[in-house]
Structures are given as C-alpha cells and as structure tokens.
Length: 162
Image 1 (cartoon, rainbow, N blue to C red):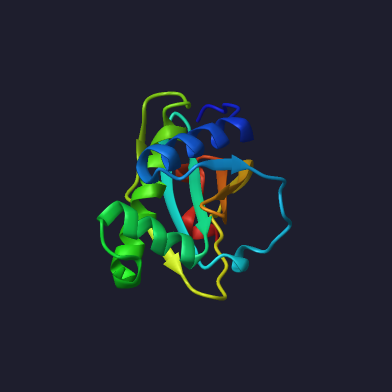
Image 2: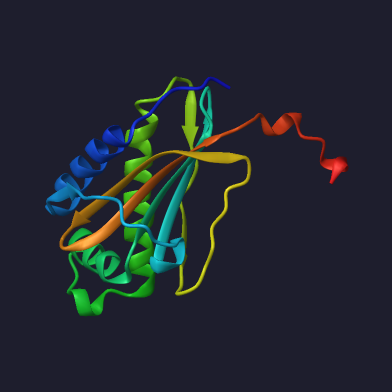
C-alpha cells in the first residue's frame, strides 16, 4: 500500500464542487466544531482499496439529508422517504469518495456506499487513522467529511491470532 498525503483543503474542494454541481447548494469551509460522531444523524461511507486504502465518510443531519434527497430526486421535501434520504446520502458519499479517489494513486477501486442513520451510534473503521477532515456549512447545515487512511495491509493479519 502506498501512502499519499491528502489535505483537508483537497477534501473541501471536492465537497464544494459536489454540493454545488449536484445540489446547487453553496458550501463553505468553517472552523472545526468539536463534536462527537453521534451529534450527526446520518453517515455515509465508501471504502477505497488498491494502491491506497482507506475510507471516506460523509456526516450530516437528517434535515440536510432530506433536503438533498428532495433536490436530487425532485420530490417535495416533506414527501422524501427514509429510502430517499439513504439513496441521496449514498450517492453523495459515492461521488465525494470518487473525487477523493481521483487524487490518490492508481489503481484503486471504490466500494458500494454504506449509510447509517440514528441518534446514538458510533462508527469505527478498524486499522485506519484520520488523515483529513473538512467541516462545511452547506444549505445552512453543518456537514463533515472525514478521510481515514488504512494503517496496514489486512491480508497480513492472522485471523487465528484473535
């Protein structure tokens, strides 16, 4: 696995472009607000494997996710279903992850997105460290994007040693 530096500025640029193009929402970088992961209600993740391995997380409130679903699926906001919200967050995670992937060494592949929603959850991606983070204000909602880099090659882990 090759280690490559990706900056928070890179993540902000990718996110600003995605939110502007996909949602027509201006996004701006804001000072990091210390918060627990659980303060967000919706999380989308994609994993990148190959020459670089890691995870890209999109964290947002349900209000933002519902608004994004409304815009992306062209349905009234109050009629956006839970499935619509999950589809929108999955797609945004996938597009942001693809933008991050394009800045990293090739070859690499992007996983299908995973979406988690709730009021009290904890996400942990084993064998990773956060290498970049972007805190944004988009459509007057706080959004956070985290990039986690893998710390080792999982095939080197002995499954019998646990």
